[in-house]
Length: 289
Image (cartoon, rainbow, N blue to C red; front, side, top):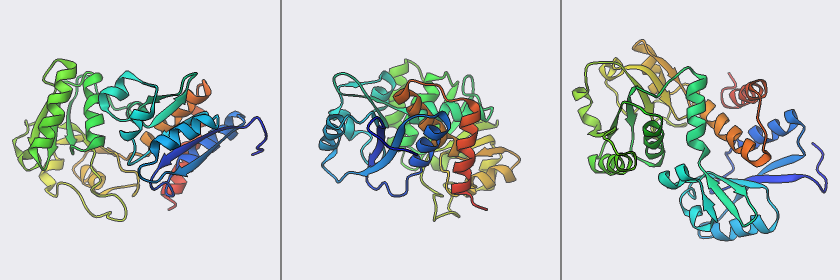
């Protein structure tokens, strides 16, 4: 990599950022595509998000990713927000415009591309969605926007699930999202579902944890998608496979949310060959065995 006076800079703001794999994605893409571009992480202390955004714009930064805990807070510092990101209430990608940064949510477009790459469809499906945090809220919006037939939103506390269901159903003028207590999973219809695991349960180093222990629950799943990518094979995934289903982790979601951001910043299209090359690097970084 040669850095000179024409090098375009992008980066990541969040707290913490030391663990991020985003530089691997973007700097690999720049090398593969021959772009004079560099991507670096920027730790931002609590209460300084607006300063960081204004400073990045003043420094002619081409674009930024935003990670926890600032995906909602950053919206107040933007001059425009994409419609889907505004509905979700979370932004993870900032794109430079003539007046400031515009916010997008490539987490969800990345998830959709990841699912498509795995041969998973949303339209017409009945889906189990586990969790009612920020990630689950975004997945609920994605499922509704992609015309899922039903989404059973299971959470330990019913009120959080109800709040998301009411919000998403109001936006899409239907009753797509059905809130349920996690403990009531035995009341689900007798069929097999696509399931999205959208909690942090099972995230390394807590590899042996899972949100539902009962093996009978996993008999209800034909395909399980865990948003977690480390460990590479979560206990949720193992239980789905043990019950005869297919299972995927969140590594391709990480890949494609990054690719979507890279394409927005550089006004380009990443080929599948280059996407596959980056994925192999990510896989080696997260699953060295």
